Amino acid sequence: MVTCPFTVVRMSLTVDVDLTNFKKWIGDTCRTFEQIDKVIFDTAQIVVGRMRGLAPVRTGMLKASITIQREGGKVSVGPTAPYAIYVVSGTRPSPGRYVPSIGRRLVDSKHPSFGMHPGIAPNPFVERTFRDVSQQVIDKVDGIIRGMIEP
Image (tube, rainbow, N blue to C red; front, side, top):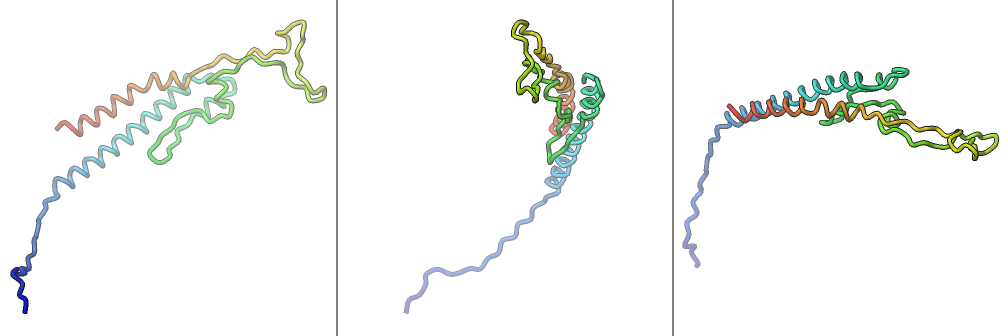
């Protein structure tokens, strides 16, 4: 007969953890994220107003198409008009319009500028808007984060 030299002792361990401060920290963090989200949305509204003020107006469609779009945690502000990219980036000079009945473009070889579209100069109003407003966003979010870190 073989005997075991070890004695088996059954033991239980109870650990009490006070999560009061952790719950408070989580609550503060959630409130901070809500504040940041509110600041970002409020700033997006400021951006829309500023961008609409800088947008060129011919028919008003480009100006009216400037909207806020939220997708998940991302907020985008900008024009949604189909031709907005051409206004913002400009276009190069190009040969005259295409005439389907003759199958070619209208260009005069004696006068190369005749029949040429001069192109459109870029109007980077979107970039100017973000350059003007970006520091405001940074300052507001920085203030919220500093308030969270510093007592």
